[in-house]
Length: 267
Image (cartoon, rainbow, N blue to C red):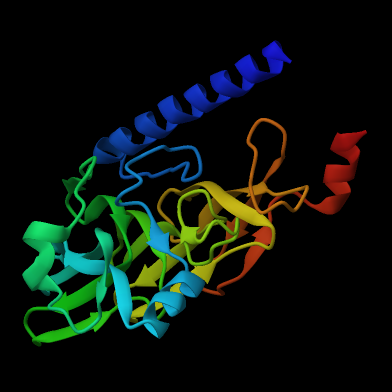
């Protein structure tokens, strides 16, 4: 029993180290990988109240989280298009909905723990709940995502005809704890700056472990962790991972290893 606990702790430590190496090496290589379920992070800023909890508060004309805007990130330098991460701040206690959102931030917002954010050209490392696309030349501002989600680590990739922004995120309280956090099952989100269109790449009973672009292409290899026992949580030490190939042009997400080959490997 002690050995199992020690192995689990060691696995978590290894995941943390690998995640840090991947995140920092992005500054140099432009590649990106992330382990959203293994990072502890700052729970104050990495938590979004579930839809059910928000509705309960709304029924009483209350709210407990308010929006906040991070520094605009110049993503398309030629056309002056910025991406602006939208965050939430958690209040010490619920307040009436008719209160001023920005007027109460100095005195009643819980900043406990702080928030780690890192910037590099076109990228943002931290948590957010939506992204705004601001076209400076046209004076146009739109939101990237229609629904509520907890996004993590935005990464932009540049091509001759396109800029693609990618991040991982969870949009459902899959573990039923009343909050949307990095422990919930996640997806990969792919946004085309040219098309102003976002795509969600997900697999049933699975969460994103890592992803990377095929060198020189828009296609991706995505590693998912499979929630084999269907308890809405992925355990890295005991549950398997699998790899999917994403074709950007067709939008198809297919298994890299066929069932036939998988059966042979399993023998």
